[in-house]
Length: 187
Image (tube, rainbow, N blue to C red; front, side):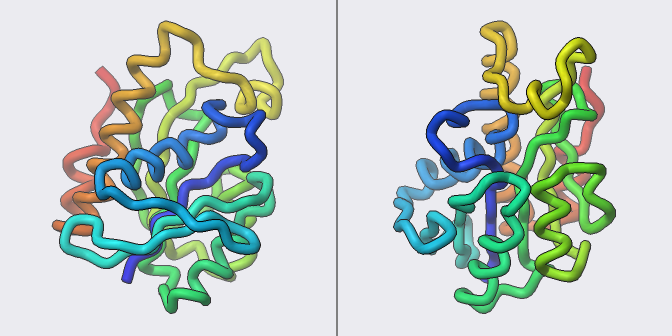
């Protein structure tokens, strides 16, 4: 069993902001596989087949910096080991729309990933990172809560599709196959 968790801020006012691209990817996977969420104490969740694999898909009902509590509860409830966790999140240090898949490593300053690492007591889980760009004139904590600009929407929509493809590739082929296919430099 795999756990696919999008990281973001749950209150509706953050819907479609840069910090919530992880949610957008999970919602794309829900649509592709005809799955629907149920609400639990700290997260939205569903289970089903993604490709040939059984998976639990979830979104924390917390703010980003408290994502780890929900992720820990999801893994415990469904008996998923951290090595089978795919956390999907934004990355302010990558150009808008760029993807990077990696296993383990530090959080790179991402508060949601920090929370997951702290609560799971391990860095050994898969991350699918989506670049959201950066505006040096806006503090990072404000920038991530902004919606994408009109000219960025086609780029981010494609990135969400590709990130969903990447998750499906991890499950159907392997992490290495997904990294080889999707970790390309922006052109």
